[in-house]
Image 1 (cartoon, rainbow, N blue to C red):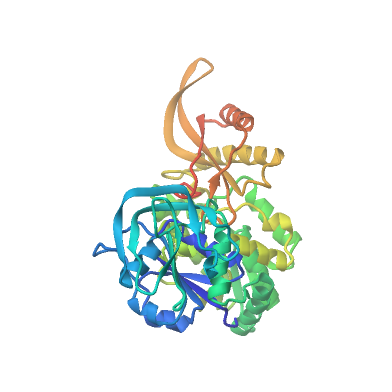
Image 2: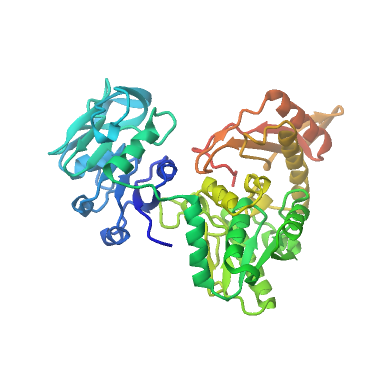
Length: 512
């Protein structure tokens, strides 16, 4: 692809890092999250238009706190420090950071100087999310204060000559009024970005790149029937046509009726080479007795690869494996950025050796909502593009603990009842992901005047745009009541249903 204008986001372990990236992308500017200790030479090679320091939980004056290379400040590139990032900038450039007498958490009124390029077009007072226990006592030489609160006299600062800016609050969260406008001002007013990151140009350039890369060679696509793999398949199909074969593996961990639905969609509605592989016994055999979620993901990741290798050999010489990996998979797997949250089966779960010339991940740089835009740009039907995500490891990570056929059957039925109720009540347009989890908890109940000792089903429904953060969905009580009653009455070995009201963060969307 032609070189995009780029913003680098240096990750200092802040909880909102992915949100910063999302806000930058929403402004039509490409960005990449890198670890705080990325070598300065690598940063120079990438030739960014600007750099953003994220927040983080540490105190900059402690010896072991994360710090970047001080040469960043000599590159002549604009820098925006957010929360910890502002304190780090202050500390490294000779200012003073101290522990606050009174911490600030929550929505606070910030008085700002809207003559600053960073705050152009904003009101004099803006409600912003504060989350800090340290504060800047003295700004570095060459800086001016451009924002304050009652308890934080230096809530924002700027060095107009060097284009360094710091804000103590979090512009990336919805709680901050005009937060996206602040980020946009940094990108356009200060970094002089033009906003060239758009999905129509992405499709055009990516198809051209894939044609040049793959040529007349053969490729197989790991197709799950979900949004990411379907969009990846459509993109590759546009590039190489009949040289692509989509392989759908039924690993025995799919939802009720899922295998049949996927096969019907891709054999009747798309002009692609489609192969279905029944590998239920193979996968469940490998997973027998395994309860650790990381181990489950790694076993499933390796077994998928082995099936694709075997099927590829049946097709003759196949050089490339296509995967629908997206940016959140990479971030959460801890590949090159931050801490590992969980190994996605298609990233951290891959085996050391893969018998393909190369694994191609055409969507690796995209967030989920960007993937959907690509799908629409490629002409995929809306019902497929906006289908709720289903994880590659399937029900293996929704059955807590070891996996058996009986547990899978219980979960399939409970999950179907919940999903069916969400759809029939018209809630599927507003809720982005909804499913059931078979917990490893058994509890006492009473049914028909008899004691029971059976499983607890947890229901999960979230609203999100990028799947990096999510808010639990307020499903009406009467719907939850009907779902609970139906599950307990109709699904054997379930005597209790609970609803998960935890957002992301601190939880992840999936339980494992």
